[in-house]
Structure formats: C-alpha cells, structure tokens
Length: 307
Length: 237
Image (cartoon, rainbow over all chains, first blue to last red):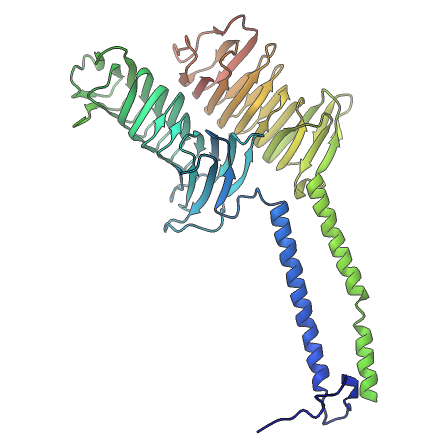
C-alpha cells in the first residue's frame, strides 16, 4: 500500500488546514525535532566544558589512569601510604622503565587487570624542576599501585600496611613499612639507605649494596641473598625475627654477628661462632663492615652456591 | 482557525529569552568559578609574616612563588577559605584545610595538619603532624624550627641556616635528613635511637644515642634530634 502526502509541497505548516481528521503531521514532527537539537547542543556544550576543564585544571589529577609524570633525570620518588588494612594488603610495585624522564602510575586489580582510574591515589606534588615527586598512594582492597620509573631513581616509600616491591632500580632507598613486606630484586642500592619493617618480611635478592645500608626489622624475618661493596657499612638488625644472610664467595668483608638470646649458625668458610658471636675478616682488604645483630632471632650465614 | 491561534500561543510560550538568560547566568557562574580557580584565593601578606594553620585534618601543600607579598590558595575548594590577621602580630591565620598554596619564598610557617609538604621556602617552621608525613624539599630552616611527626615519616632535603637551632622530633617514626656536603652544625640527640644510617664520618650510636658531635668547620647551627625508638637517616649529599 502506497501512502502519498497531499501536503508534501506546502510552504509551511500554517498552510495545512487544522481541522479534525487532518492532523498536523509536520507541526508535530517539528515539535519533536527541536528538543533533539537542544539535547545535542547541550551534550556538545557539556563535553566541551568537561574537556576544557580537564585539560585546563585537572591535568595534574592522578585519578584517571594511567598517569604519566615528566621528571628530571635521576629523580626522587616519595610515596606515602597511610591506609591500614588487616587483610588483602595492597602492594606498591616499583620497577624500571625504558625512559629516563617520566614516571608512570597505574592501578592494577587483584585479578591483574590494569584499571582506567587511580582510586586511592591522591594527587602528586613536585618541586620546580620536577626532580622530586611526592605521591599519596593508598591502593585499596589488595590492589597494586604499579609505578614505572627511570632505572636511576631514589626512592622514599613509607607505608602502613602496603607491601613494597622494588625491581631493577639503582639509587638511594628509604623503604619503611609497618605491616607490609619489603622485597628487592635486581636492585643496586647506592648511598645511605634504610629498609625498615615492623612485622613484614624483608627480602633482598640478586641485588648489590654500596655505601651505608641498614636492614632493620622488629619481628619479621630478614633474608639477604645479594652482594655488598668492598667498602661501606651494612647493618642487618632484627629484634625478635631471624636473619638469613648469603654472600658470594669472593666478597671481602669484616663480619660481626652477635645475638643476645638467639642462635648463630654459619657455613661460610673462615667464620666460627664463639659465645653467640662471630668476628672475622673474610677476603682481601679493603673490608666492608657486615654486621648481623638480633635479640631473640636466629642468625644464619651462608656462602652463595656456585658463586 | 481556532487551531492556528492555539499554535501561535504555543509558539509565544517558547520565547527563548528566559532560557538564554538562564544559560548566561549558568555560564557566568561557571566562568566566575573557573576564573577564581585559576587565580586562586589571594591573601596579601607583609615581609616577616608567619602563616598559621591549625587543626587541619587533611593536607597542606606549600610551594614557594616569585611573589614577595602574596599567599595564593589554589583550587576550587579554597575560593571561600577565610583568613585573618591575628591581633598585634604579623601572623596570618588561615581557617582551612586540604590546601594547595603558593607563598613568598621567605615566610615563617606554623602548621598543624595530617600531612605537610613544603617546597622551596626559607623561614622558621613549626610543622606538626600526628603520625602523618612531613616532607620538605629545597627549604632552608631558620630560627628555632621544629618538625614533629609523632610517629610518621619526616623527609628533609634542604639547608639549615647557620644561626638556626632546628629540632627534628619523632616519637617512633623516621627521620630522613639530607644535608649539603659542606653543612656545618652541632648535632645533639635527645632520647633513644632505633637505627642510625649515615655517611657523615664520625657519627655512631652509643647506648642508643649519638654523642654530641660537631660536623664541618666552625659549626654554628645546632641540629637536635628528639627521638624515641626512631630510625634516623643522616645523609651527606
């Protein structure tokens, strides 16, 4: 069935007789079109305003991820994480990227999915030359704050319950956790550095320490399987927890291990336990000072196998 | 014809003027807030002023600016933050929190907040947090400055004026202090240190404290560490 509009050529709607039985099709059609146009215009205005606001004012918000922060070479990254969680501890994972002039923040879900927002991550602060970046990082619910930094970066991370996981970074480090674990892998620690936890484990593997470095714990264990420079001071201290240290066979150091009421075991050649204390010079001078100290915890000293 | 008349009345009701006025008011409001957001809440101060912020349950971020007499509170939330002069003193009191502000490069700060960051400021600073972080970058401490974190972390990378007597106080927290390699000061310690990590020669913990020590030549500043089971890092740049 074909329908033919008898008023298709009418110049305007007022030419259509407005009588019952002859409904003003065109007028009704116009009435509907205007709101659509208004909605469209409003939508465009809102989008433009939102985009302008974001680009003008909210560029530095870290709520949308991933967030890239331009930095000077060899920057210092400060992260403060104050949130306390008993279960599903979040993790701050810091690893080296390929660029020397940017830091990339990304929140990753417990299911290992990168999220398009950075909930729990506050804005960041930086000094005038972008050599120091301060970030409030409180990932929630077992999520991970994934931070990609230049390979040469100084780190100052302070967390309440978040774990700290650092891979492949060279620089000075102050890593302090209350309940969280501190794990370093393939790192090169330079300068005056501290790894301190209250109850979390501290684990340093396949890394190198140079300078003055302290690993300190209250009740959590300290596991050290890395190398140390031929000079410098390296202190591993634990009150209630254990210390297990493994050094290469070619290391040169003066060992001083002592415990109050714990135990000391060593299979490192040239070392002997006497009255809960070990004192020995290992290798050729100069000797780094390698100190192991516990109150109640066990001290174990090994030589790396195959090293 | 009756229908046509009704239609004209309907079209008169759609007079766009009110909508345009309403839209202009909205846009004007947005423009006002955008302008205030960009320019900030400007407070004029005199030289030697002390900026006072108390009982802030949030953050205070302070950056030095090139202005010598303006404190600018930035961000939309700071537009209507009130401030006033304290009577008979050079103190500006800001009754606000969660503040991002720029200040003259030389100004005294007296801030009590959950978290404090200060960049590039020179002056006497009394900064207090209750377990929160205090971070000072490229600052110069003058006079009897006191940084007290009560269990939180304090990070200081800056300078100590030769005539200053600053105190870093930490009740179980950590003190991470980086000073220039030519820094000269007299070091005093009160209370028990948990760990000391330092590359300043001659510093060591004896009986949970550091004996009074002179660092550098002709030290004039006195740096006091007031600690209670705290971890201390004293780093020579």
